[in-house]
Image (tube, rainbow, N blue to C red; front, side, top):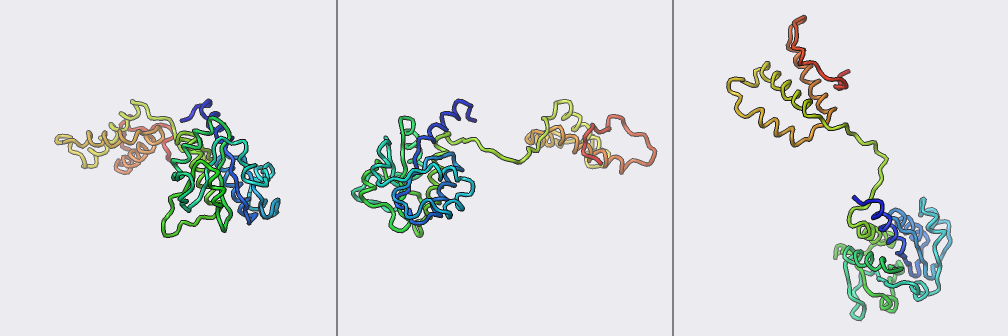
Length: 273
């Protein structure tokens, strides 16, 4: 788990990452890229000569990431978009003989995060149809590729942005980024030793009464059951549920009015209704 200080450092790394879309032709992809960025904690979007921006379709596809769109910077050239950066990586599926060395997305994300500790960094994504020009790739320190299926390596622009932003988030948080959930955790306090022992005593009594366990030849049955429940790390509610089941079985077998052993009583909150 990341501590508060580590989380702040990790967020600071992501704040130094610029996602640069070079000549994007479809405003919907700009909005979808903004959404992909925001879900991973990135916010700096740079657009080099976009065909249509701002645009209502970009807003619609952003789906809650309109703030990223509003803060996006429009640049006239790749050089101006990279001017303040200390590192740039060109995301491309095409290998270039004269381009910078290639690195897969996961390894590249580690490298990008390391450079982000020293200054602003950028990832370049090309036009939806033509990709990045050779001249733009040569302005970068690395080419970065997503190891997709060789038989069909084409990714939508926003999908490629999502993959790289995800890998960057993992790298920035050392593989363990914090996550949020709206689900209510379903758990109760761990069972105390006395509660667990009470379950074993109750279970053994019911097994003997049912004929399942011969007390004169118990073999290793209880030892195996202890090992089974020991692996489960029982919670208090689970103990109560199991003892409630055992109590119901005992009531079913006992004649009406017959006195029952007081130790068979079930704790509160057993789950019985």
